[in-house]
Image (cartoon, rainbow, N blue to C red):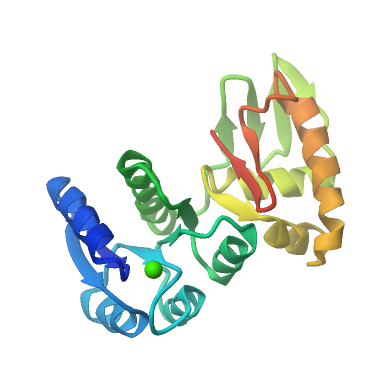
Length: 228
Ligand code: CA
């Protein structure tokens, strides 16, 4: 049974989440504040955490930092706030994904399943898969070979680096800051134009319709996601 820890101070939302999750055979614990969340996470060892960022006793980002001190449990953030800064802060602190309130229960459950699946895959599978196949292109990460419509596509080392980070975490939102750090060793948001330029190049080389990308998705103001 997959155990979910719901951290949320709105009792109505907690009730809805608990009912929906239990109906789908999840085991559910609920914490109304950050301190209870950290205690329950240690005591119950959940498989995934649903975390509201606006809690009565502490900032949700500090709950993430507290959890990340000892746990790699997937954390799905529930954020009421429209601004992207806070979501970026949550992702950079170690959250895996976010859902903006109000959300549909189906969307939430899909994100939850994806978060659980991703961590389920990584530890046992050893090195990440080296072959990425989509309907439109194939990437051999080991041989550094990209093929589209039967023809080799030439990618620069920087393009490979960027692409590799995205495709090895399919479906996951990777923040601009993380990509800038990994690829260019910088974290200044003033350099996000590097990312835009390189992502545009990658789309031109790999996407069938680069202006309506199907695989290399932009999350405005936040980062990028590879949809395999
Ligand atoms: Ca709240």
